[in-house]
Image 1 (tube, rainbow over the protein chains, first blue to last red):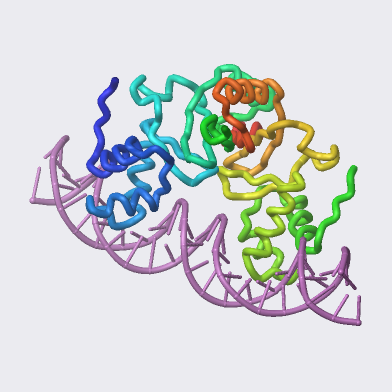
Image 2 (image 1 turned 90 degrees about the vertical axis):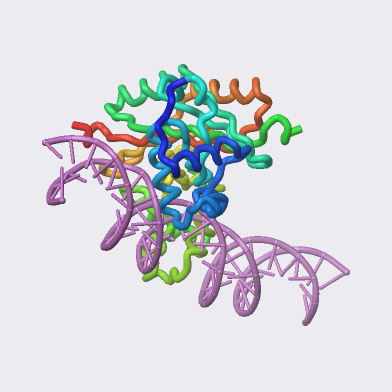
Length: 133
Length: 133
DNA sequence: TCAATTGATGTAATAACATTACATGCGTTC
DNA sequence: GAACGCATGTAATGTTATTACATCAATTGA
């Protein structure tokens, strides 16, 4: 596993997200890090921005929230193509997965249309197996 | 084409979105409909909610904005499975498309995991062919 | 006929999410 | 030690979305 060189704020945010069992909003992160000196949203957003660039944090667009990458152990998501998320609306649990066929189909559509893809979001909202039962 | 029974506010919002060449935010819609009596965000959000239920308007999660369904002519998107969007970050143009293989792969993942999908978001951000050139 | 219900509407206030602008501190480099 | 890059701090503001409460019109059905 590659060692990341994180600043203090980045470490605090990543640690918090890694420990969380649900996605956290920026303002939730802010609240939980007040005791560590966080005072303003910008501190959170700046840390999140860098962590996303590093690929160790993902933003869930349909939730306006953030999760630690669940594949951090494997030198992370840059290797995997587009990441898809399944989000349980009941318990908040998020599953992260990859599918090369989906990547291929999206890439093929883009090729046909001459569309230059920069970032792809795939999010499934629903109920996890435990909550659906 | 099935005829929709829309209220006044719903018609105003749908007409505006249909004419727009870009996604519009709720507050942009509000501003543009002030002359038609719109005064508060809730009027917009209520109309949008119904229009989304009818399938004639889609929300773009990564933009916090809304578009008229581009397949309105064909009794609309309920028939097509998940809709994917390609959004040009330069000109704002949105292309809507469907891919059964992607649907199948997502459904297969969900089946394996026992995940009950309710709503799936697929959005590609990038540059359309015109803007990439 | 007239309560009861339903659904659309209107208004105000507030909550939740995100960015801009500006100032400070702190190493590195030359 | 001046200049630079870059992480940080703080305040203010901008943007997106919801909650709470009131009103009105059409429908229903005893």
